[in-house]
Amino acid sequence: MKKIIICAFVLLAFACKKQETESFGAAVDSEISEGMPAKDQAPEELGKQIFEGKGNCVACHQVDQKVVGPSIQEIASIYKAKGGDIVAFIKDDAKPIVDPSQYEVMKTNFGLTKAMSVEELKALEAYIYSNAK
Image (spheres, helix red, strand yellow):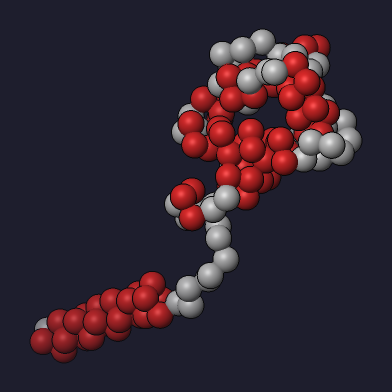
């Protein structure tokens, strides 16, 4: 019986030691990632990460060509020319001004954007405007 208990403790000790080595011994990546605090990134960088990552905007929008929705260059140009508020639109607080016919398709994504912080929404806006022609 004592041998079983001792073996269990030894296995437990090795299991805990391995876990510590993995979590603390891993190399730290110096590249900024989506999981890092937004204050460490330029708004355009954070916006691009959200656009291509958790926002999944890239599924319907490309930088320079229409896919399902308008290109982000077109969005930036029209919102800039008309003085629109991109943040208000992606929060579903403003009507679409670029391609209203695609509004119903875009509405399915408002669940994602409504859950984003104001900082994340402003970062998306900054990224979109950074691609204006």
